[in-house]
Length: 240
Image 1 (cartoon, one colour):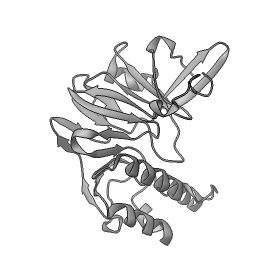
Image 2: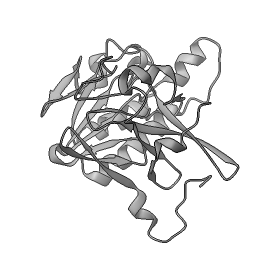
Image 3: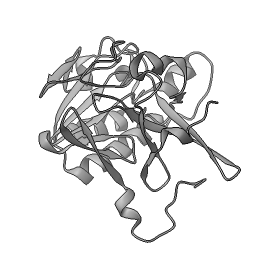
């Protein structure tokens, strides 16, 4: 359980998990991406590209490879599902100048990915403006089949939406071991996605920030492990 590995063969069956949202079928992938088969669309949140270079500009040196790693992971999951559309739910860049700081090879990698699918950037609080150099289409939010795709979740509990922003993470303690990992969290009407970026932290789903969205019950969690995505009973969750 500590490494979230199933004690049986057929590990591939844990690569993603089916979930239902507002009557639509989705696949929650172990990478933190969400695939919508009915729309042939892959949804990701909080890539935070160029976070390393943003910190470096302020004198805090981080390895400058976060963008490269995040784009490589994203390319692999796009290929796995043969997605025709990619929707990035805000904070795709750590700040609005992120596209301008990209290394030439990373910018070319992004363009190569975009050649094979429709690309939609949803604006976030970190990137309220995204330059045309990033390619794709930029929107404040969008609605697809009655579901709103946005960056920050609405505070009301009755909402049909997929959002990011909060970087949800789950903490589980069993048999004397504790594991804390990014996760999807939803209730059948709303889904908050884990951060996809390489340099992103996580906020415990039991923190007060999630209470206005899900209340004190009715929360479903899918935890990201080393080799799969796993549903976790809410009674097993613990605070930090």
